[in-house]
Image (cartoon, rainbow, N blue to C red):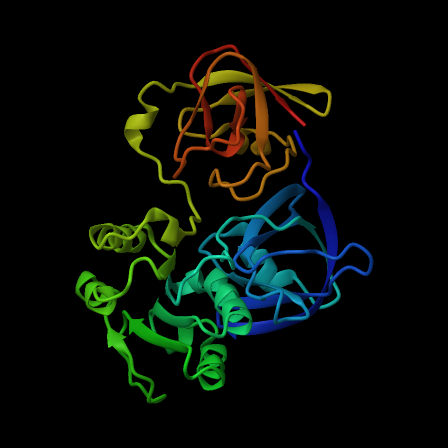
Length: 347
């Protein structure tokens, strides 16, 4: 099993995007430059109250456009890491990060002429990264952004989006949705309410499905609604991309899961943990002070991969089948023991 590369990045600047969101701007390392693709994410690692936490944050920068590496972080209610970053991180701080990951990216070799981007709230972050990159590198592709927020005050990258419209008037356009009514002093066209089926269908019903791509990053109900409509219109799955920030767990999947004792061999040391029903092996290991590497926590990457030596486990919540895992390999963030003799090796 390959180990994840780690870097130390220095905070060059911090931009206040909204009341509850900031962008960290990092200098590239002097020797080992970090290579990434627009739409990927960077995992930041912190030690908070004597425990190590890792969280993935999407790039808001684009490698073909921006000289600094940028990630945008929005406060999450009771979010230990997001609140720590917003409150404690300062210019000049050095932060440990993992190598860029994620496959929510644009394939520059595809023959298309239009891309629709669908985002809500902080879901705009990977979208704006890809939008900037495509506008800069693919001048013939037309882009339309559909972006939902509460109001203008909570809208990330409002000035940047306006700047991109002025710079690329023939290639870039947008539609805003606001769920909370307000006086529109900015004279920017806004649709009231949330992004809905009628609007989606009216916007894309006449598109050429073979020449159009869709990128979706937002709540599960929005993603499912758009994907259902795209399927009805005949869009191939290869032209539809979604970014997932959380595991979707079906209670029925836990019917054969019970509280079990599990042994984890990590860095040559055996650790006995009690995995309570409903908690993943990763969560319990971290609570026990076992500092295994992890990143996405959604079953999308391989950072928390472990090898099952004995017993049986079940992975729950994966949005797609992981064909890159061997038969005895499991992702700890979405793994649950189903027998009482589980023994796992983690590098």
